[in-house]
Length: 487
Image (cartoon, rainbow, N blue to C red; front, side, top):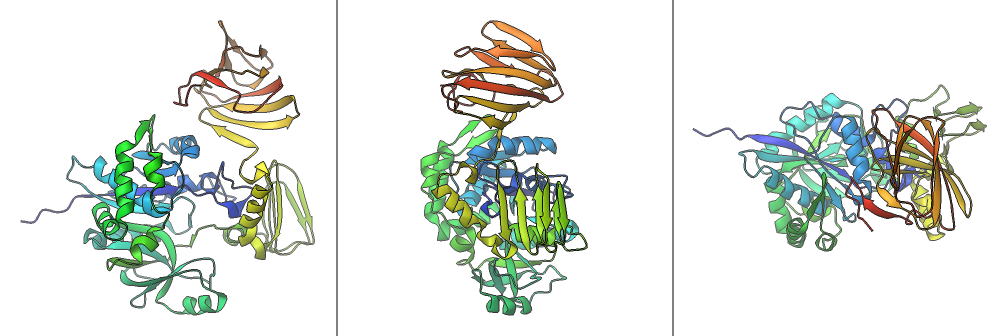
């Protein structure tokens, strides 16, 4: 009697992108996967990625792969939806999907090595929008049987218009977009021109490449060994040298950076004979730019997508978004306007694919706004720079319940803390005290100090810094509960 294969679906969530086409909202320091992009979003893009599959049968907690810089953001956002990931893997730098998926497959096998469970990997991008969750889940369920036969499954999205911003997959036969029957992949096509895209949109053999996959961990590693053996070798070395850091696995830098920077589509799927495409008709969008966000957003009677403090008159088919200030628009058509605390984007919607070019230009000219938000996130909370001068700076600091900044000192500045909401525990030298709203405390230059929130409620305070140098690197740490290096 043949025993039934016991498998577990392991979501592998790729969360390492920078999303520069959605600048100024999405930046390197806090990219789009960590944002609430749609007007009625309750969850961030990352949170929605797991929420839409969490009730599937045989699903496990996820493995999340992100940049080292974003580790505490990922941990905090997962905690907000009561999910403890199987692991959070920290990339020292982005090397595309082949190394990331290789590392994830090796880790999944290692995690389940002492069980009789066959890990099936569900590869998901953390920045996709999917409207029809039921159809999405049906497509996943329909892919499992073929994946268990060592086939490599890729989801191909039914084209709804002749898109020139997506890659395409050609299948060996016409796909029935109301069924979930796999077809062998014939070839992959890079982003086409308008005329070619129109042809693809009419031909039922062509689908958009979603960048989402299903396969056994052993099956994908076998094919990576066949077609990208150096990547597999470097990833195996990398894992042997990697170290756990609190709740994270910090990937060893040298061997990981030695991996070829390639997408799994190119390194494996274009070469293997085991690639199958399964049609996906679920209201999918990768929200790659402001125009695509406008297309899927709720609109008023004039076709405008408005969010925040916005007044629009004689304006149509535009996206206008305000994070802080009142934005008044008159006589606009097909225009993108995005206001944040420190930057404003104004663009013709036809140019939304080119936003990344203006970000590159800002980088070349040394504008910090290209990559960094006014709000900076830390494992204990966040801070916002309200105003600054050469020798002074004012910040709003938010400390999460139960969180604590490191025990530290500064060589070039003193600080004055004023609590405006909540309760703070303050340690300065040998002094320890509790202060509440409208109370303040002074931290002299060179004094060893620590700020904590001992309560279950948020803490907000105003910090006034004064000194000859105000950079974030003017810090000497003595103790840190988040594992950050001491100086």
